[in-house]
Amino acid sequence: VLNRLATIVRSQHVLTEPDERAGYEIDWTRRYRGDALAVVRPGSTAEVAQVLSVCNEGSIAVVPQGGNTGLVGGSVPRPDRAAVVLSLARLDECSIDAQHGEAVVGGGVILESFQEASRASGWDLAVDLAARGSCTIGGMVATNAGGEHVVRYGPMAQQLIGVEAVLADGTVVGHVPALRKDNTGYHWAGILAGSEGTLGVVTRAHLRLVAVLPARVVALLGLPDLEAALAVTGKLRRTLPELNAVEVCFADGIDLVRSVTGMPAPLSQRAPVNVVVETAGDDVDLLVDRLGGAVAAAGGMLDSAIASTEADRARLWRYREAHTEAISTLGVPHKLDVSIPFDRMLEFERRVRALVSDAGAQLVLFGHLGDGNLHVNVLGPSADDARIDDAVLDLAASLGGSISAEHGIGIAKRSAFARTRSTAELDAMRAIKRALDPRAILNPGVLFS
Ligand SMILES: Cc1cc2nc3c(=O)[nH]c(=O)nc-3n(C[C@H](O)[C@H](O)[C@H](O)COP(=O)(O)OP(=O)(O)OC[C@H]3O[C@@H](n4cnc5c(N)ncnc54)[C@H](O)[C@@H]3O)c2cc1C
Image (cartoon, rainbow, N blue to C red):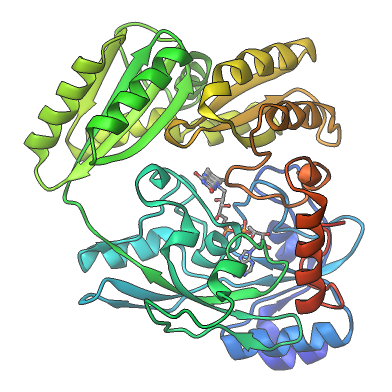
């Protein structure tokens, strides 16, 4: 099989040596790893189709991989089943339609490279996230990535005009370029968004872009507690249509980021809760006035800082964005990404703190407050001890929340999947999986065991 794959992609793109494979076999969190039979790096949709056809014939498991920044263990082989890692990194072509604000982008294009190219032509992808230097457009489609601007533009699924994907047997589906409006039957883009590499391999995406907003202003608000932060968020959402992001982090997280980065304190006093707010529009002075006025009117703040220059904005964002990396310096975290109804958020915070403290573990919370999305990071329990994960996810589900707001199910949350999806829904999902991938070669073990 490896010889046949080498004929398709050329032998230099079939990596079999342990040191060549190593980086593809362990995930970003270092919690998940498994052996790859080989890493195969196709360079076109046609090559992806041939590779899948060969693997399907031999019932060989295939793990699609983009930037390997996923946080639920879905992008690396499982220990119980050797697999071919299908790296899509070479699908790196992109063409931007600067007149109509659309782009056809290869599944392996790195978000940051795409941002540079699209911004130069006056357009931007609405989804942005801290992993931008490594995550790929294909991975973002496959995980239906959310990120920092969901509060304004929605997640990746809402940016898709069309998706081209290769099914397990090598069949190519989805028109790309697609039409803005095309209501003919099942919507492939919708089916593939969030499918986590279990239904097809995303080879190209046709993306809707938004105009680059030349002016941006960022504020960091220090608040006494989460209740005050939620109250301010509601007021800002109501008064600022230009609101681009509302993110939250807590004093212990800021302390950790400061100790790892050496950054100074962001505010004159240490605030228990910190909210990063961004607005974007045409006129920076107007944005500063409006955000400053809205913050003053909202009240309840211990202190605040506002930034309009690029360097100052980046510095305020870094207090929030550096959380993921800073947490990883403490060990291998249990990363749980939940969304909670706004009216249960305070109860969730109180109970999750008690739960993690009772387990003798360390908690670092942060997240996308404007979307009701908290990232629960727990340090202490060993990587294979899932008790704390179960307890946190049970708590989220019992409060009417979701066990995965934006990271997906992967391997990490598979056993909790049934907590917030009905049996009928799970059966329907399994039926789709069986129909499109009858030999279960595509990312087996992700979503379903
Ligand atoms: C610092 C940091 C910050 C992050 N912030 C956010 C955030 O704010 N919001 C958010 O949603 N996520 C966030 N993430 C998680 C991650 O970046 C996203 O899930 C991202 O979309 C994954 O893209 P990737 O190319 O790295 O995919 P990978 O990690 O390579 O793969 C992720 C999943 O998609 C599948 N896959 C990958 N490429 C393809 C393809 N071409 N076709 C089919 N399946 C494929 C894989 O099999 C796997 O199941 C963050 C991660 C890090 C490390």
